Amino acid sequence: MLEQRGRCDASCDFMLESDTSPIGLVTRRYPGIVILKPYNTCPQICVYCQRNWEIEQAMEPGALAPEAEIEGAINWIREHPAVSEVLVTGGDPLAMSTKKIGQILRRVAAIPHVDLIRIGSRTPVTMSMRISEDLVALLAGLREPGRREILLVTHVEHPCEVTPEMVAAVDRLRRAGIAVYNQLVYTFFVSRRFEAAALRRLLRRCGIDPYYTFIPKGKDETSAYRVPIARLLQEQKEEARLLPGTRRTDEAVLNVPGLGKNYLRARQHRDILSILPDGSRVYEFHPWEKNVVAQRTYVSVDVPVLDYLQRLALIGEDPADYASIWYYS
Ligand code: SF4
Image (cartoon, rainbow, N blue to C red; front, side):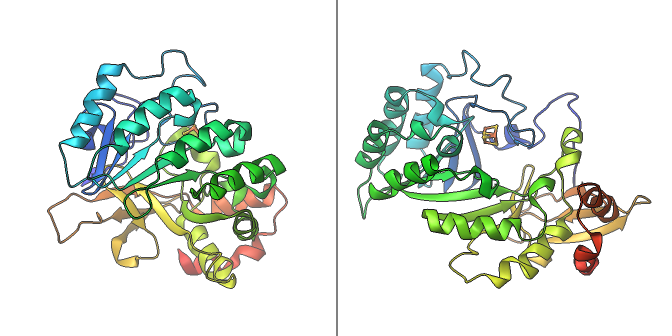
């Protein structure tokens, strides 16, 4: 059983990425997909970022990995034919120059067994002009329908982040045949009733597919941002479920350190071990490959539901509007 690591003591790697890193710059949690991290910073540093233990400053000089290390990582992917999908992320890879990201993506695309390249980037939201015609042409040039696709996963947190510039950037990508998906981190500040539902509707109008909704986890520094699992389950049932199926395409997940995504709707993938005196639920999460290969479980302490309701009251919400949360906890 893995224990929750909430503190930066021996290692700040609270997601245990080093446990699933076969070579520098590569993380592999699933047989068919790897994460490639050539650029280790971002135009912004989100407090809840699961990789911010690796990122020291926004746009930090020297964040680009040495060429030999990038080459080694790409060679490793080339030598592993089970890998069909490469997620290029970071940091934010679109903070690199178009020339540099182009050099990396072309080498990945040239690997015969890679048939999907995914780019994780928040620049469509934070710096929409980065989605320039040059960049779009580069990405579109890597597509080979029927053979290899390229798509972009972005990170819109709230309807207020959707600007005309962002809509235009997404439209440029989609006109070039590049699908755009969204990952929402379900923080306290976006967890109020119907906010995620409003975002889903707006994203769909912009041509973005809601993809994952993540429960933030782990670190003490993020405690003010965290939401109990029960609230996300309530949101999925009582708010998302009211939307047409084409708009509630996101999957509610907890990204379990060392184990990969735990689909929260799959009740059999977790147990409640106990309830602490402060009301925190202690969950044991089971790995996605349980009963396929031997794997440890992961124990995590959730946010107390009452504490969450009291925080909502402090920002003007009526806890009575959330009373059914106890049904999900
Ligand atoms: S935008 Fe994404 S990669 Fe950058 S700090 Fe935020 S969560 Fe991390």
